[in-house]
Image (cartoon, rainbow, N blue to C red):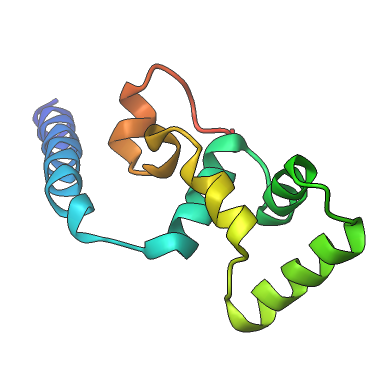
Length: 112
């Protein structure tokens, strides 16, 4: 019985410490535009390729150009301007991928 109580207390302490440290250290983890791109894809429950397709659909670009821009992104890491603008137009909460934000936002992560 005592072992079970100790285990439950340690699990609660671990969870609380993880949340506190994550909130404190998350602002220091700046990932840049590439991180924002993957965070928006994560929060929308789609791939980065699907974001390229969606961003290109707003502009009158051909599918070949979008595919070519995506291949350039994979090879060099350069994000085209229309995709960069599309990511900036997404809500700020779509770019925050910390566990505490996912848990306390009232929803569940899109990968579940």
